[in-house]
Length: 355
Image (cartoon, rainbow, N blue to C red; front, side, top):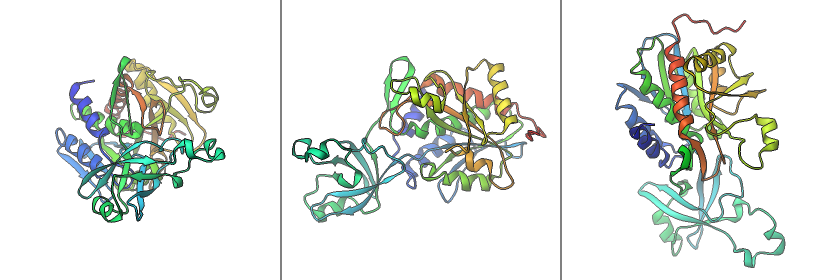
């Protein structure tokens, strides 16, 4: 991976952008897109559309969501502590004791998620997961008035965790689900801008996937693509305690290459096009099966308007929905290469009807 691309990925990862509050990610994504694309659009929801080769055919939409899970302030109590609710799906074991960054109108406020120390808990409480309703956020305020000068009800927050570079080309950090996918679609657009494709490409950073793929619903309706490829993350099953999950999710290894889904949500012709491209370009891929609609942006893309030929390309990821998700740089690079070549080889009038 080029240093410039890695620097962009790190900037994107640093954005405080839980679902519904994606402004930081929008700015980073949009600013980077404008370095190579003359047509960059952001809609009323915050989806950002990078348009390459307008007027081409077929019309192709690539989607990677740049929202993340987080929390929202619901109450500032009389002592200045914050009470919060989740944004997106949290493992209840994760939040306690974490440092958080709160996005306010005036800037970023640090905080700590507090809980009753184990020493003074009741015996029964020591053996259960403390629910979020029994946790609070301490921002160091002396009282409610001081806290209200720092934060407001409705302010979002995320776990304060940056990107760490690890051995063997691995990166760890918060929000690779799915900043990794948003990164890929932008890098694909950057590559296609230099490849003279026949297709009209819309590389879209989408919003609110973690609360129901809402951004993909609106953006795909507006773009009306013929072909749609969602780029997301999926469970790597190559770490301890994943034997049972492997039987359900399939065998996926970090560093093993992009993951192609097969199933009801996936257009068979587009799947074969991606698979043939991978073989031609000698890109290793992994295959998983989805027996129903996927919980990704591929789902609403498939059923928008009169229907879209949809596919899902995923990046292997360890420790999903934790502050230390791990991805492989090789997987990122290979996914960009696969999708760029697959889209570049699409032709006007190409048929996607599988029957």
